[in-house]
Amino acid sequence: MSTLPHLGFQRFQPCPRLRPFISCYWSIFKPAGPAPLVTEFMHPEGGSGVFFNFADPLTFDGGQYLSHCLVNGPTKHSTKLELAGNVDALGIRFWPGAGRAFFRCPLSDMLGQLLTPRDLSLAILGDDLVEKLAALPTTAERIALLEASLLQYLAASGLGESTEPRIQHAVNWIDKHRGQADIHSLMAELDVSQRQLERLFQQNLGLSPKYYSILQRTSFARDLLRHDTDQSLTDIGYHAGFYDQAHFIREFKQVIGITPGQYRSKALLRR
Image 1 (cartoon, rainbow, N blue to C red):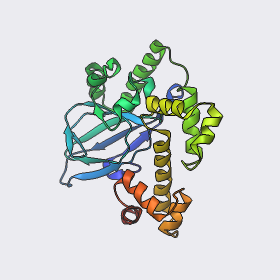
Image 2: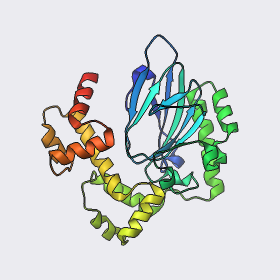
Image 3: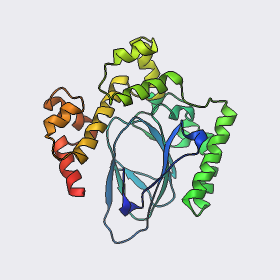
């Protein structure tokens, strides 16, 4: 989700102490009305997050979730979000590799799942916090309470100022190259074996280095498809690091669920 004015979608930056861990907070607010069911798609980028829902149940990929707090692990595919009735939700989005600082299990155990705090034994996200957040009248007050809880957790856990240094370097390296560089070069920089790198990624991202690279190539391709309407699909695929058009279509559809051509058509229609 990027800009959804019809849903009152907003992003908020975390405080400096939490910026190494949190990409943003976000909120959606939409009163119930005559408008039909709203469907949006959340595309994977390697991160994880938390949803707080203060209104009617949310529906993800056809399944309705009644819990007022959900932890979403990393995903390999786009998630379909359906919104109906009253919508009042707040979320935390962790950077890829940073969520594990607040979760007690390897991120691979959370891959593609929506879990409750009780599933993960996360006292920091207990019913007491959810009730306190729901009672606050503004998003700013809710975020202030969330940040106080997260900062208290960091202080008590003795965690450092940032995520695990090697995974932070690896994620930044793949992002910088938009998922197009040879992973063996990264292994040489970190002085780790392929097996060590795989383990590092599975524990902290829940994804392999190869699949995280696919997500970055796909994300770059989506940006090009939305904004560069003059380039052909073949040129965009090549620019985004795919070998040929068949490779582009196959991997793009694997992640997003539709072909690059269908994605561009939808983006142009929305504009």
